[in-house]
Image (tube, rainbow, N blue to C red; front, side):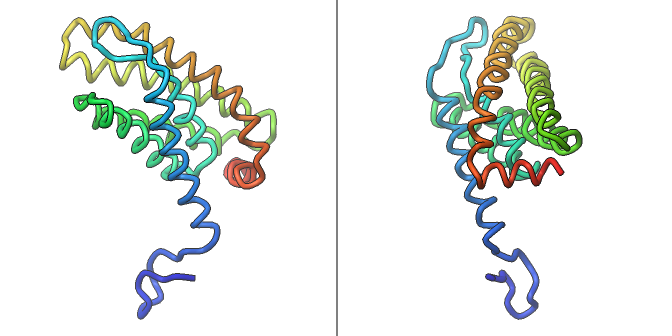
Length: 189
């Protein structure tokens, strides 16, 4: 074990379990960044785009503990916008995507007591994503674009539905990986 403060034997203890959580968090952040940056479909009105990164945002909330999911989803998604030159959306994206993963993780843990209910937790996470993305970006964009922000709502709903489909496809694949399954199932208990 590694202690941050060796004299007091307090602080963050680096165990194998904590190391796994940090590695999974970094991997999900990287996946959120990459999947947000690839396969961009431009949207009218705000100059934004539809992407598949929301599936990873949802799954980071499911697989990781809620605050780790928040960090992975928020950092990964906002890094994609930072790298892509969408500077105005960096902070907004960090908060919205982080909150989606956090809320999804909390819902998944609250209801995911069985395999069937874990799938329901993923689906509810998808609904949370659609509401937070469409509503959250609308609220933020309203102050930037005024009434033009209404134009982004349909595209954000489409993006959320895409995230729903992709996360439902990826969830069983991810759960088949032993370390990921152990983390996600333990979180649902």
